[in-house]
Length: 205
Image (tube, rainbow, N blue to C red; front, side):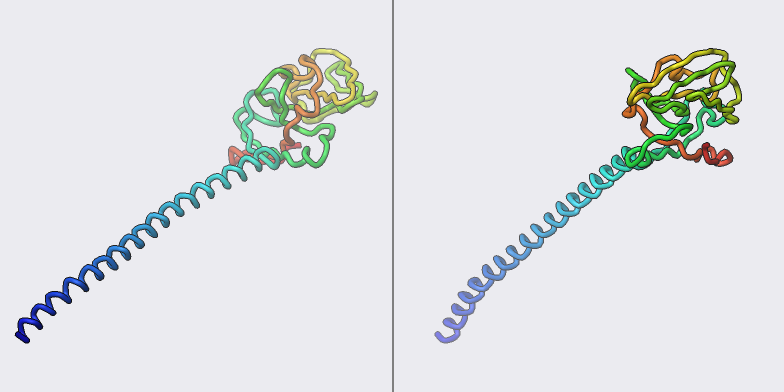
């Protein structure tokens, strides 16, 4: 009887302990699985946040600080050549104002494309082009950077918030002598240097 009882007790004890262990193991496994899922989810979330931050910083830099811009066309020869890439700063015109003879990136009225030109006239200026030479407020400028001087003649009075731009390849440039002056908001950036091709790297003046 004693042995039978011990056997019965033994059989009674083992099943009562095993479910408890199984339940504990199941709970532990569930917890680890849950933590694993949270870890993967958290990692994905952190990657998404990182990507969004990088995109936001990139857009901010391109909008307000600087941007590489490709030259398309020959209106600025030989200051800038077709297919060269320029380093263009924008912060200059966020915290300050454009200056006469800056090479700039701009937009024309009614156009979405961006153009590279030289800023020759500021608000209130009287601009004249005669005999191939530029005169601003009665002062004639030689503009040594010009390769081809224009054959057209004209005079323009700039009002408040009006800016006059011309290409350095004057006879072949679509600029303010045809489309009229620009507004301040249409001046986007200041071209500082050529960064590509490597053998053409130089400052832009």
